[in-house]
Structure formats: structure tokens, C-alpha cells
Image 1 (cartoon, rainbow, N blue to C red):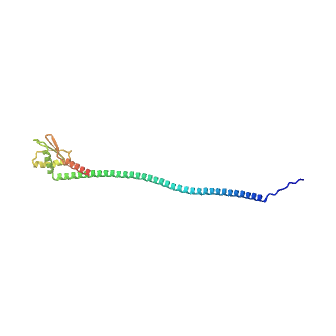
Image 2: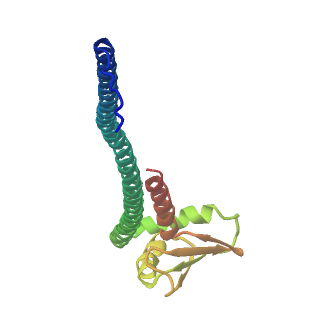
Image 3: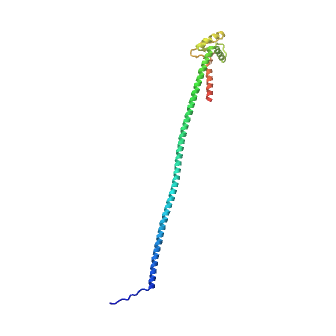
Length: 222
């Protein structure tokens, strides 16, 4: 049997190889540490950045949300206020217009009632005056005859029955050449005078109408 001779490695060489092996392990460990540190740094940086971005985004979103919400709410409130104001303004204008119309109607009614009252009172006063002093009617008839063209004919004087009876005695006493004619269609105080085909109203009603017209005009201008 043949035997092969074993050579022991040199001690220095073994130490060198051991150092290389240790260096290689150290480099591997170091690289792993660097890689782990980089990875952790990346993860931590990402997490920190994520949290910060999330917080900033949340804060900005809330701020923008509040601002947009406030603007939207303000716009809606303004629109509602404008709508409410327009509706209130229209209602108020309608009420004012209605009140003015009612005031005008009331004023016109009051004016008409006042004028009619004045007419009634004045007519009663005239009747009383002519009843107590029929000579006033005679004076009105004389004034009316003077407005007509001169004529030799006797004037025809148309009177209400009551006025006719009162004045008949007076013209006889005063020797007035009037032809008195009783007219039942005439009211107390009314009188028509006809001379040579010309006619004039010598009664009190047309004078009263003129006074009432003037009064109505004055009340209407106030």
C-alpha cells in the first residue's frame, strides 16, 4: 500500500487566509448593515413624509373646505335674503298701492258726500228764505228780465205752485205787468221767464249748481 505525503499549510498563509475570510465577513456584515440602515431610513422617511403630507393635506383640505363651505353658505344666504327682500318689497308695494287706492276712493266718497250735503242744506235754506221773504224771488225775476232784449210784451213767468201763490200778491201790489203761469214740474225756487221768444232761467237751482261746481273744483285741487 502506497501512502501520499501530507503537507501542512504554512502558518502565515493560514493567518492571511483567516484575515481575508474575516474581512469578507465584515464587508458582508457591513453591507448588510448599510442596506438595512438605508431600507429603514427609506421606510422611516416615507412614513414621516406620508404622515406629514397627510397632516398638511388634511389641514389644507379642511381649510379649503371651510372656505368653500363659507362662500357657498354666504352665497345661499345672500340669494335667500335677496329673494326675501324682493318678495317683501313687492308685498309692501302692493299694500301701499292698495292703501293709496282706498284713500283715493275714501277721499272721493267723502268729497261726494260733502258736496251732496252742502247741496241739500243750501236748498233747504233757499226754500226757507223764499218762504219767509218771497220778495227775494221777485228780485231774481226782475234781474232775469233785464238780461233779455227789450220788448213791449209782458214777460211770461213760470213758477212752482207754492211760489206762484206767494208772488201773485206781491206783483199786484207793485203793479208789475207779468204774466204768471203755474208750472207743477218746477221745484220751489225755480223760475222760467220767456219774453218775445227768448227764455232765461231765473230760478235758484242753476245758481246753486254753479256754486256746487266751484266747491267741487276747489275740493278736487286740494
